[in-house]
Length: 332
Image (cartoon, rainbow, N blue to C red):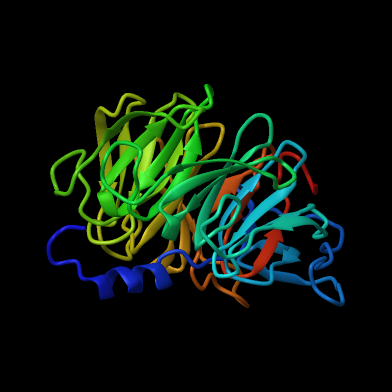
């Protein structure tokens, strides 16, 4: 940790940094027929539709704890990370709980404030186990396969890892948040490279790098959720390309930006947590649009986001999992 960051400040970050839920936002605002999906995780499922600002939001499921991270597998199942419950829950798109795993602890297969999840081509799940300062790998049915890391700043070690993503070769990219860097691991967990340091110069971080994602070209995008409130773009080798954002509430500015996601045109979607919105930016960082949730239930703290193959944008935001329609494909 840099000088001036107290242990109290770190504890506060762990409490407030990554709380979330799951919403789905349409990239083209449209209305479709059909009823909302039932809340399958609730004891008494019932349809629930929220409408506002020209958009229909459908509740897909409700988690039993705040959702800090999410991912979609090849079957359309939603993997939700419940950080405070120290577990992973797999939902169908109808809201049914398929399976869940995880208990609190530090042994293989246990978790201590997990935050993000990424899936490989085989459906294996990679979890940032933040307070255990490691990455854990699970099979598609939740069997623990491997763990990598440990507390520290040496290659392959972590200090509160948060964001995680994979490239097409299966290499694992981790936002090593409190070490102010990005680390790349091989599919077997061997450290390959890292970049970043504390500072405000291009390619440096001064606000906890937390969100990380790769675009279609393999470029790496990293968000700083505190301090600088900006998005960095790097090449796959770690060369600095660009950065944009800054602190504020006007379009294109951020207040605690979280994990980015991309559509097929390369547009960038960022959960702008402190501003209670999701922003859409062009590939060069120009503001395009924003969503602040339906008027009856604005985003309290949008956090992790991902996108399905039809272009629906899933937003973690508390405990709800919502879905809506896309104009080009109709209701799913």
